[in-house]
Image (cartoon, rainbow, N blue to C red; front, side):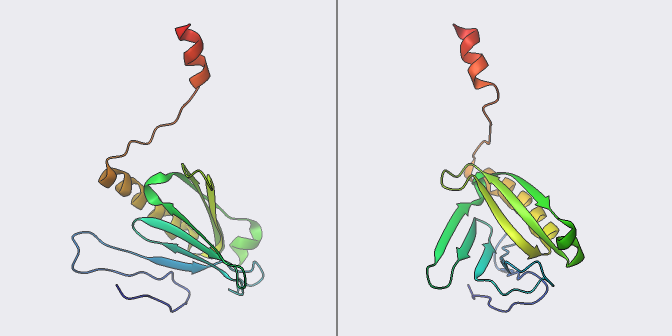
Length: 145
């Protein structure tokens, strides 16, 4: 698979023509809120299987989260972000290290959010994983006693 490195206004997409399904890869950089310029050392990569956040210049940190663990996705756009065409995508996950991943100040945030929603559902189907939440679990224990 060829590594895409160009950075322009559209998120990078890689299509694999030989596969049965579309295989996509979005690469975005965290941007300054001021004019939406990408002068930060944070890069977000979203593929069909995993979300990766690379941070730092001297001391680097890489955080991965499998898409099947993403339970919900939220798009947040402040006034400043709307002015400069940016957005923040918050991913609520079942991951122990980072229960909420934020893709902060990215371009085409709505497209990335929609893709994460579709891809996470497809990843759960492929793994045959059921996503459930414990709602009022304490009350159930009280009813049993």
